[in-house]
Length: 463
Ligand code: ADP
Image 1 (tube, protein in one colour):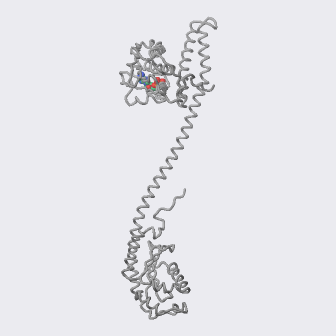
Image 2 (cartoon, rainbow, N blue to C red):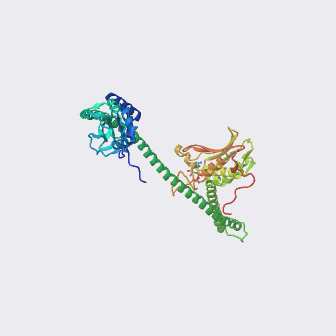
Image 3 (cartoon, rainbow, N blue to C red):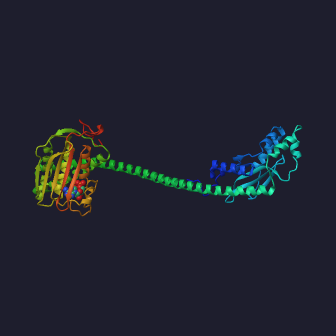
């Protein structure tokens, strides 16, 4: 993109440099003082100021004769735009009427930016009206014209030039001041425009990056959703057939074969859980969470979640308690809230060392809500990491040699499901002392219409 030249390189018209009204006042005072007319033109011969003093009757009389009018216009055109060079001195322009003008260029930093025309005045050496005037018409009244000419100031040549010089000095100061003010103002505008332009460019670049990132994110979510779905189908068969073999449907098994099949099933279940989480996250990111609302007993959901993690908790020697108390019915998506509680309980069990305890309790919360708490006395979370544990794929120990399994998706899913219900998930924790995660849900969610699908669950991806 080519930028316009800076204000420092531009030629500025005389009219832009002056406060024209104030300048016209100065010209009037000046012309009144010396009793001689004054005209100022810019570089393109546009008239900026025209003050007439004393010559109205004289010129008016000449103007009344056709030939006089014609010659008058020619003279005006000459003083207005005939070349005068760019020498700073004055040039005299005689008029056919015997009067005279002196013209001087207005210079600024070596450039001609206009001209000043001083006059008409009667030159000191004029003794009688010239024949070029008296011959403009047969009925020309020389006595009358003489009388009119008396009203025009008679000026010696040297004086005219001095007066003009005086005026030029004044004009110089005004042009200089005007230029300074204009440049300051324009530079300020240029600086603001430049900053604005840079900002616009950066904005455009940011918008581009944002669009690319969004597209990448969409591709990633699609990929995850498709892959997860494709992985789930064969995995379900692996688990199903292992189960059938364990039940003896494929014939009798040795103890060793049973043990191996048990491992295949357990690892298969873990893998299925991970794939389900990835599928959930990709649906969440694609904005495809649909809630299937029904009225549920929260106590039952809590007991279900505990039952899911009980085998692992027992294996680790953890004490597990469920304290549902007397709870109101909850209007929610049963499967998603169950999933939230399972995720929270799985973490509590996972991050609590042998001998510790995990407690699931619930109580009414402000704003017609229910808070279900999963508390443990495990390893805890440092304050500065508390907010980040809800990020997708975030794990406090993300190293490849980490002690605990998982993919960093569980809490992100809990948060999204809670928010889809109009609820939230809170956490408080202390390193070495344990953590409390609270799933706070409205008893009756009021959701925007598209998030609610009372009768049908969201369609399975890919078929
Ligand atoms: P995952 O458990 O699969 O790694 P999550 O999203 O469920 O992923 O949790 C993210 C991280 O938050 C975990 O890796 C762990 O570092 C931390 N975290 C979650 N729950 C607990 C807890 N009860 N105690 C200590 N740390 C926890």
